[in-house]
Image (cartoon, rainbow, N blue to C red):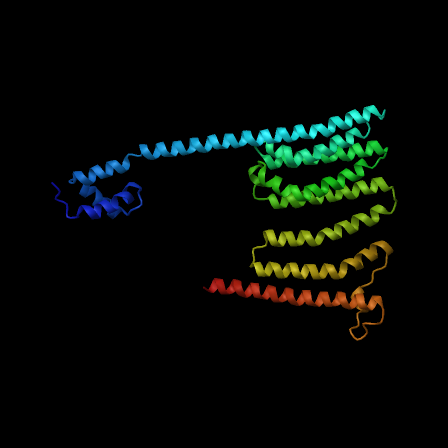
Length: 332
């Protein structure tokens, strides 16, 4: 007999929420009081608590998905192995032809390493099951370096290292952001992935400059390359630190970066000319907007000054807009 002051329809509507602990404490008290006297609602709650059917369906779903995943992996691996087998055909043909004409194994290795480069971006993604992109990047980098080394040996050159360093630098610019985001890092570095990427690219740039200096053996090289490289890195580093770590409104960050771009665009060539020739001349001092036909120097100075003025004006407007937006948010 049900002596509860609440009818069963109301309680039965609350039962799913009660079971999922999604109702208020007051509603739970009402349900507890009701099911203490109502066998019908208590039986319905018992049915809701019986999750064996749901567990069975979830288990079956996971089993089907797992079997399908294994089937797809096997199919992908088979396609990868089949593709690798097809790639072996031109390798064998080139080997036979190379030996038949009495050339030993010279250009055969060029064909082999070229196919390795192709296999690194086709076969490896299909065969490797874990960390596929990382393994593909590594395989592509190694196979590309092997191809360059093979070509260098075949041509009798000494240019492998002068080519490999910029190749690695270019690939690291593309691959390193993804690699750093997907490799385990110490806890104190987990929030500094962007900084690690910038440091990595900066280090490789200096390695490239160092290699070029060693390769050229040009005495004044260091007095020219290092100052210009360092000066050129100032702008991207300031913008990076501003965007990543400066706690201001996004419009303010854009305005600061616009100012930096305008300033460095204006004065970078002046600094380069100073490093090369030892004399410092501010290019925009030659500007004369009334004499656009007075020669290349005047036209160049006019364009540079225009860029500078526009960058400063836009930058100041954006900074002011960002400051005003931040103040309005604080007032709200």
